[in-house]
Image (cartoon, rainbow, N blue to C red; front, side, top):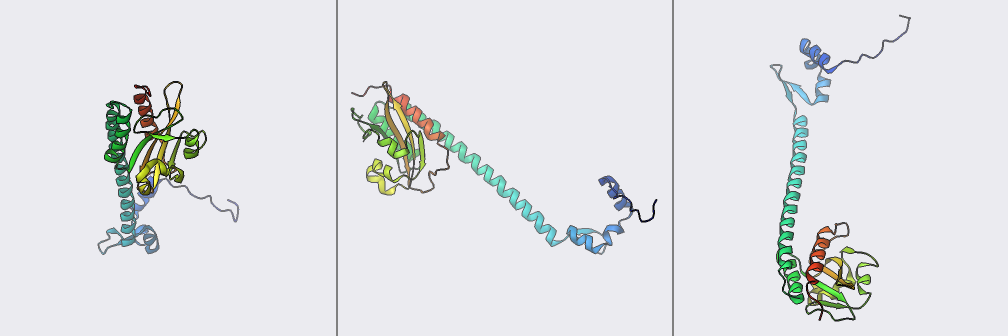
Length: 225
């Protein structure tokens, strides 16, 4: 070897390190600085024990794992409950006897099944509007949910009049367009919540859109007389 040359860094496999420590335990037990770095300490009987700091780290990791597990379990339960309520809501809607009964059932399921302030069906004029449905001027749905938008989640002040005497309770809405009959007339299925976080802009509208399709198919059973 040339004078001044440095040996290459040794790369030790984990099993080699383990064998060295087993053969020479004092390399670990006698190095207070290394033990402190690892969060360990040596008892009088040469038993290596976790220090409070190490135990605290283990405890915090367990708490994080437990919190994450509880969140996943709660989310799964909520999804299952929402799915079950949706299936029940579909059955309720399909049992409607006429347009007025359909509108009543939409409001009932909003309050009784989903704990909302109310639900409604609206239809743009100028043609006849079924009993129990809200009457909208032509183009009003574009103002309520946005031009060419299919759905809107969150709070929309211009939609408050749709909820009539309950408008003062509404803090967030979920609204989806309807296209009913042939030629199609433009309608709206809307749900209102008293909770500002009941419906937010970052929420998906899949559930409400699914109920909107059920309302469309059910409403098409009867003509608008």
